[in-house]
Length: 153
Length: 134
Image: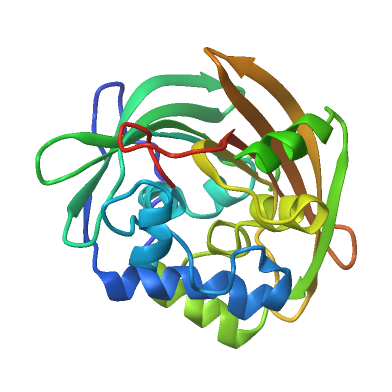
């Protein structure tokens, strides 16, 4: 599945991903931390602004919102699918969260090469990445960096 | 809100936060992969939200919204190994009347292999509809 060939050029896009956000997916995502860390998760169990309408209302929200970390995970997937271990060993990802994502939203995950440098047999790429909702609003933007082959291998 | 600001006032750059330790099991890896709909997803971080857990261990639950998250990957974690996470306050500043905090974490496994380093920037305090939320 993972293709490590660096045949991308500046301006080219990765194959986008599409995710439909549902309350069930949000609840499942929120359950991972408590399942793994138990009471040490700091996440009030699975009851928080991402899962509970009342908790969300207490914080001025009209309804629960998906964690920004879900968008982060989707962006990670976009890059990991293309670069595999080279991303997971030496890569990095920075994401700024711009707008809430709600249950019912359909988000598309994008990435495009913004720079490419070949030095000593290694190709270093910088990708602009972003998440867009069904209204074509960007909900998160960021940058991914990966070197092929990874300097850590 | 006043209590939250008092807690924020007690925080200092460089403060060590709580320490986490957990094991990557088949079950929690499968749960994570199902939650992100990616069968090859790596672990830890992301759903575990270590930045939040280490902060809560030191200061309790604090209302905040997430603004920015960075992860740098060194080595994927191995199934069955214990993951240990340490965290500290990387930065703290006020901008346009708002209180910001940057929490840094480092995850290593039981034999000392570095897994990942993260930085999470949060806005402490109230949320309004115009703010991003995560």
